[in-house]
Amino acid sequence: MPFDKFVDIETINEERSHAIRKSVRSITLEELRKLGDEIFHYPDDAWRQKLLQLTKEHPHDAFYHAVTNEGVVFLYCPAEDIGLWFLPGNGMGPLRETGKRMMKEAIADRH
Image (cartoon, rainbow, N blue to C red; front, top):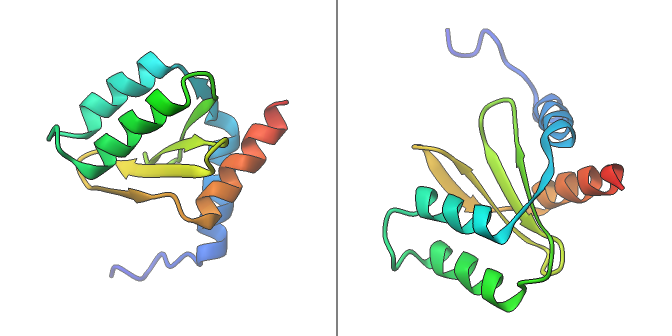
């Protein structure tokens, strides 16, 4: 049955936070642009445009990349407090407050 292994959201978030802390790293603008080309299949994708706009407007700001155990990729720009999550082949969306907090904490732990 699908619910045989029910795990509450707090446990999931703890596991994600741990994975993010282990994998978080700064990402260069070139890596970010390259990753954007892989993620976004259409040049007029609104998120692609936002990502490109951020890199142009903040060429000297830090961007960060992390991956959870489920393979969800988090991208985050602390200067703008904006981020994106994506699961290759499955979906993407804006990084909500919980995800941003996880990234902020992971980044702070690195310094």
